[in-house]
Length: 355
Image: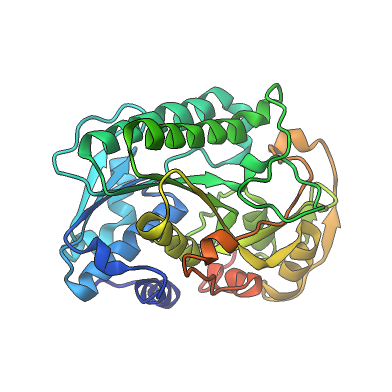
């Protein structure tokens, strides 16, 4: 075994004993993970390796990373412990043939920073489309048992809250808005998954994740949940650049991992599944008030300094109440609520740093 913080160790143990995941189906297989050094990718890779270390299941992991040095740092502890992890350096759009047979694929490589959606829209689209096509072609060549594409709640557009959002509830998107580079390319990547499933019998599934966070969020993360936590941890007032009317649900990283593995191993090919903790549904303002009161060393104030939201890459105001009944029907359940998500994300922090 290798050393992890208490919070991460608890997460790994909880994930590896999840009743929703038929872990036996992974015994003796090799799993390819793209986007492996991202927040969710890291948690997934470590969970797979932790299961192997505690069960001796003959499970191997191949992690596709753009920066080999970052991959070695991210997974230094399991690599030092001799975990069956192979790091493959490459861009998801152009990476070459793999040296070993792959049985399962989790495709998580994506541009994720909101500001990049408006500053680098071409790269955002190219990564989604060319990267997903390359991964699907590899899955076809290897005749994999299953593939999951990690998509986003943003494919639904900007719902108004008049009804819960199921996997078939779509609102409009304006393709001429530069920020649509992200949700529109996610939609097209999903269409590629459905097309490969229908035409080439690639067992591709889609998981539409709500905003997800937990231990390992980087200090420089610009997403709203991280900005709120950073302010509270540093004892500064929480500043909102909108009135905080957007409402959505959230998901803890470890719960996202069990959702991924549940869909990978028991989901239906050519189908999409929503993943969220429905009990966390709230407005950004309500979440800011919660963070300001509970996360830092002392309570702080919430201030609104509204400006041009386009400069921050924020999505339009929406009320995204995801319906997760389809995923729950597979036996999956979330385990961590919003306040605990923040507590676990910031556990062991020092001044000026979100752990």
